[in-house]
Length: 100
Image 1 (cartoon, helix red, strand yellow):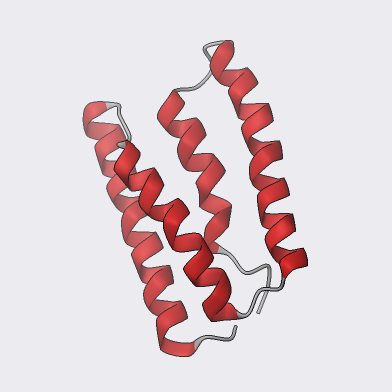
Image 2: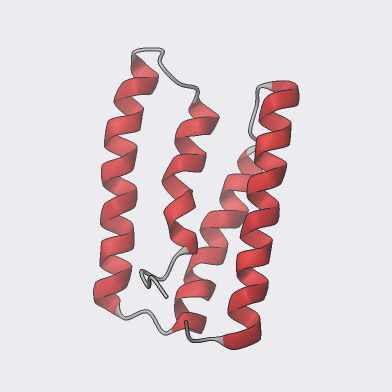
């Protein structure tokens, strides 16, 4: 992964945000919008730092759109909560597509 220290700092921030989301969801059965927004707004910074090209960004956005379509249907059926849908949609934004 390119980006060095800043990329790892952003990944640590993502991990921290996901832990906060898990604890607040367990405690209050609610995931705050500011948490999801923070993850989503950090994604372009992560993509730039890691050198993700426009095709990679397109894949990220396509994955997010597909995830939203499936999970929004599950939400409509009452199978999952809205916070879970939002968090699941923004979660892939913390990856650069590499497996190393």
